[in-house]
Image (cartoon, rainbow, N blue to C red; front, top):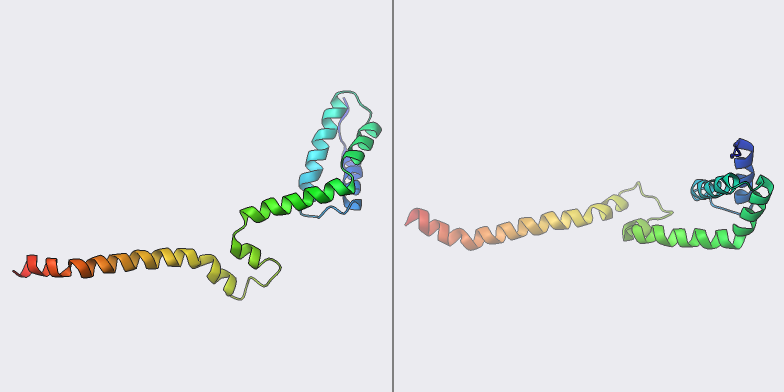
Length: 131
């Protein structure tokens, strides 16, 4: 049975690093390529041929395109606050205030509505209890 040992994984990792793959994307991509290599090895292909095919399929242009798509996908999941504060100091307070702002607006809205209804119902309650 053929499988990926540490040396073979390191060959795939070196190719990805040489191609300029970002360190945050490297484990995910390495896992995908390792699964693909395992599958081909199980089919009986020699590792050298598998590695050559994977290197051709995962050329630097394709990897760059994948990294850009991944960033766009992650950005769509990120909030506007996360996008604005990317590569900025998130510890001085403005980031926390902007991140918690929707919750503060919700609480203020609910308290404002409750106060409005209490003021509107106050004459009826006074009439009911004191008349």
